[in-house]
Image (cartoon, rainbow, N blue to C red):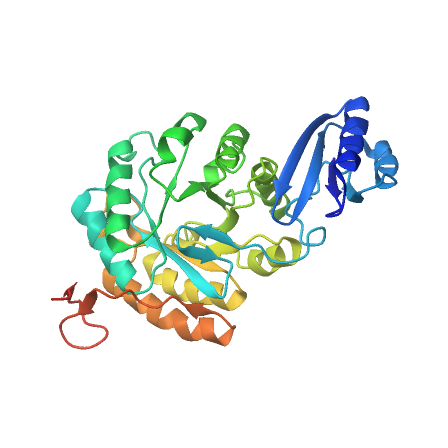
Length: 359
């Protein structure tokens, strides 16, 4: 049960509601978020809701256990924005998170970071701990990769996002990342969601491969319930009977989520399709559908990547993606971040492969 207190509620009114919840057998948890002050009563209590609604200082009561309250747009009108370092997700500019699936070495991640920054990316992504279907696949370089990712991000002027897999890694990862990525396999790892929520850092929550949107929003509720408003939802494809692509990228999710939640919504067309040739077209479609941002995988040499090379864009293809989503973003009232200074094109023309440091 969630009780939203009125902005004008006095401390004594808050105390009275908290005491009423406790006396009714609820575990009471205060939750302070930018869009409201709440008292979470953990436990069943549909019949108790009427009494709470009548108490002074109460704005609304959400008694249901299967309906999101903190993330609900109806209950909390407005649009949330989430800062990842200097990048604002959910604002007028489209957030573009780009970088390698896995950090493979300093040269690889630094090359990616400098290039995607130069062409308008706003966040550097890179995997340090990799959840893989096969235990024999490359699992990432761990802390060493985090250090390389952070260094590359700082040099390129980009905040970084990386996936966390274990609650025990949250504290150790926190100094290295500006945003925790909660992968599709972790969407319902509730201890991990709680641990990340308690950090207060931005959290990018990916939809599970077999999860409905209601389950997805309830997973986000675990983060919000820790008092962390910095939650971003990521559609990354679901499992269907179709085998032509790695997943089926459910772009229906974007407008439906926008109608249900105030949280920002981004789309990952790399995992959503698993096919390099489909990433740019689906990125255009995601922007047209109203996504607040994109997450794409970029590698200097995808055919030699240690993970997910088939869905990773080359450097030239990332530049093409940025060229092509710009007009789409403008058509739907969004904009792209300005390319960063300090890098220049070399070679002939906008689509040439050459690039280098400005002399």
